[in-house]
Image 1: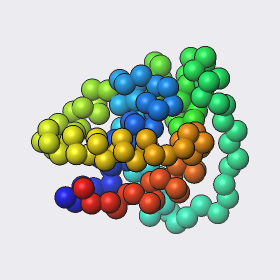
Image 2 (image 1 turned 135 degrees about the vertical axis):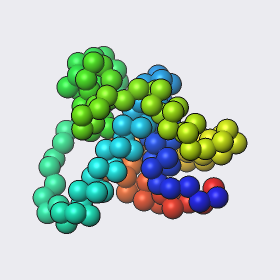
Image 3 (image 1 turned 120 degrees about the vertical axis):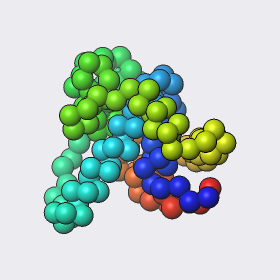
Length: 150
């Protein structure tokens, strides 16, 4: 079955967040926020061309992040900001309900389970060091699996 990249990214990021200690509901919110962030970046890149310089970002370990609750650092590992203690992209705060609504409006329960099982299988096989690093996750997990057929 051919499923577009947005829901694949969303579900992969949900499972990534869960493996990196976030709660189930928080992981759903992170999943849809991450997919939205990447969709925005892709659209900007397509309209403006590619970036020539890369900013160095120093990330705290997941254990240290777990102790932090401020809006500035809570989702730092995903390169996301937070607002009202929830993932924030563009002008929108994301919740687990946004994640559920997106999937339920587009897919039946069997397809949602297939997509979820696909993502969980990939994340379970991925070393934690790759999941902790946004760039490594993008190149070693996302690029490899984004066009998988389910």
